Image (cartoon, rainbow over all chains, first blue to last red; front, side):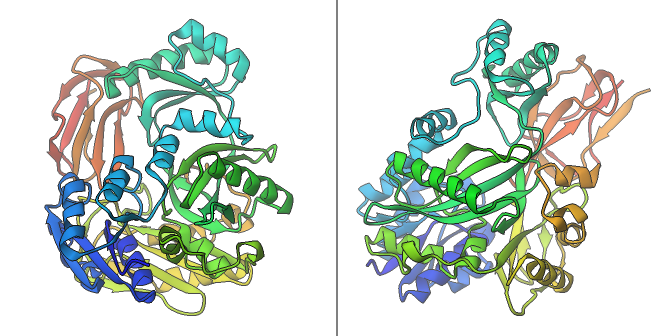
Length: 446
Length: 71
């Protein structure tokens, strides 16, 4: 195996990767921006290299600076974490061309899954269920109306160039489509300089359920069970749990089979996640997209399986077998992750600041992956994730109880913090019963 | 009656969606702010005409700054 791994990321995920690298007896190199000098991941790495100013384009997204840091420190492998350069096929290719080991899937897999429409068509051909929708942008209203008869109402009118929930609108019927099509087209032209519009089937009540996969060094693709990520605000996840309260043994088999097929369709290596929408009314699921990297919420899978996913990523990158028997996985109990963000608990608006008090909960089944500590500053340059609180219990009830206790004893002062939202959520009948869907947070705030 | 639309937090002005003189309806997106990698749409509160737009793309707004006036 390689001896030194450069971690091309920051905050909680850099720190978490560094921990696994060091536990395996390897050296960890951190790279950091001027804004992050005081953060724990910089101190805890065996070596740290300043790669630029705060702006991500000049530091964490700066391909040449990251590669140069690897050269300087003699690193032989690069772990990208999530975000920044993790899903940039050109970066992955550059790492490999520089004679370094890329801890992730091939640049080709990243590229194939990166184009959402191409990915959907590709997995559909491999027998994975996909949502009915247009395979390419519709030119005008007449084409939209024609396409709508094949898709059925209600449907989602969506700007091709959009993302993060913007430029999306639901049409209940033909009249609605006439209005919404023009609206979305106009919005897309003004916003993105691209008026292309896609139509997709709209599911009023869905859960977001995803399957963790690993493409092994020997070529097999295996699944590590599912995670439910339906507690979202602005289409961004706040809470994840495994197993999903909505997935029984029969559905799990079908979802796992679909996820493995999706991975096999691109000859996938290393860790990846197949995201699906689960229609709560019919119990049917459709492929949404594949994330070709380590996921923020990977710890809930680690807690129920008792394996370290980052360790497996490093092993696979080194062309070694994984540390467990993929044919004898035995999930135990239930795990829940809460994303502790620097944002207010009511409207979820971000608010950076210097942390004056930081007291993490501890106890049986409690894990905290934090990027910050008392005295450090959450700056406006990066996302608002300060820490992940992960709890594990013998069943969902115990996990919920441990989550309540942990939230009550977690103290953060300085920046805005969404901890009070979790206290509310963990007492909410819909969440407690496990019957919630992606509309839960909006309902709590309406 | 004119309504002033104010910024609720420190943020960068990422996109301007409307122009002065546009007719908007309650809930229409006027401007999109960006803070901590989050895109936050600023919406019209009520129907009317955009009578003033006080920001440009790339500006930094402070909490309480007037972004637009709907008259």
